[in-house]
Length: 143
Image 1 (cartoon, one colour):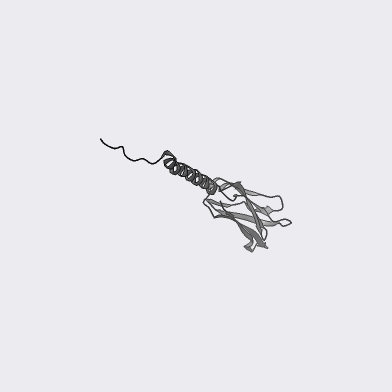
Image 2: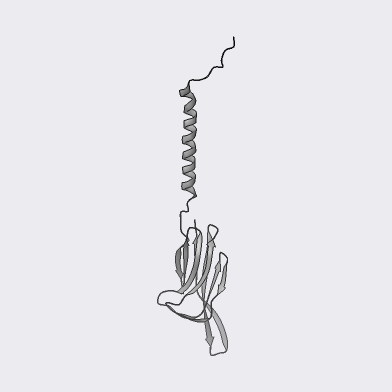
């Protein structure tokens, strides 16, 4: 007569399955927690007479806006670049409340920098036109 193969009691066989389920749930929870972005794309920075405001959430950037620093003004233009942006504003009198905005509307790679430069146009009696830097600042996108 053949003997039936030896099987471990049911209680011992279930324990490894339960431990495997707990481990799988814990690993899935840890993955969800670490996958969430820790910082927002939104930010503001000023240097000299140029300020930059970046609007968005996580790594998504909706738009970037250049303005003059509080209580400053100049006649010239802004240049904005980085993260797929590359634009030059019109040459005009920039004062508090004036804005130069570029829309992006997409996700950017982590640690991308968006920068703005303010340039003043100086006209010395219509003889020598000169462009003078008035500030450069950047906002780093972190997620």
